[in-house]
Length: 324
Image (spheres, rainbow, N blue to C red):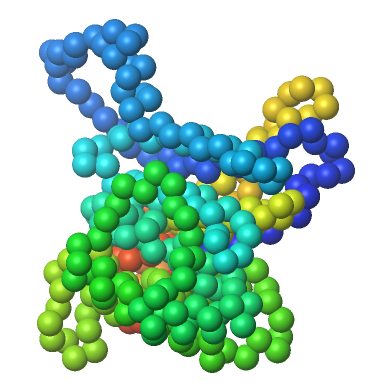
């Protein structure tokens, strides 16, 4: 994954206003053909408008924070849709989390990651004393609330939800045992959250004893998702991405014109340094097969992702893909 940090973005350009747009770039090439006699009914402007606005959502914040409101929308390109989004405020620390999750091989992984990742991130942002309080509350079955999610429509079934709670409890316990003498670093906190959730997805899919395999968690790990997440706290903006989701910063200048600034780099075959990294990590005799038809192993357009358990040769390979 890649983490980008911005403090008082582009101050030297005397920006009047800035905002963040998270966008799923269509960098993949598709060729679609239709039968010559295929008939399509023409939609009225009202019907088009209704379809485009079906999933829109807006939220306003009280107070004088750096984010006054946000708007989001989602238009399905396939059915069922495999992509999702998530927004939440951190309750034990300050900051707003915004993210998009572009799923593939099914919707399960994108939905689960969008629901779980922010708790992992929020836990990694806590100072040691607050982290210990969170750990105590989790063991006392009176857990502190880490985030307040908005427009959250995803609910876990009971058995899977309990398993996810156990995984998160173990993670928080381990965080309390970490030595913080080196000080807090935001990019390491975000990276740790992404990596640990990805590791938990794999462990939940295939238990160590290879018994009692849960088909629900296996389906999550067998599908996959790319992600782009932003954490906004006052003038501080940090963006983490894995795969081919991108963040774009829209800047309104003094001349009242908009400038779009791309903040992230895609992890796909159009990124030459990423291709070289993948080839270097594989044996020489695989250099012509690891990336075929501009896809990883001839299958995946993104070269990094969460999930995709079937394409991981080992847990060590799993982690290195997401962190290098």
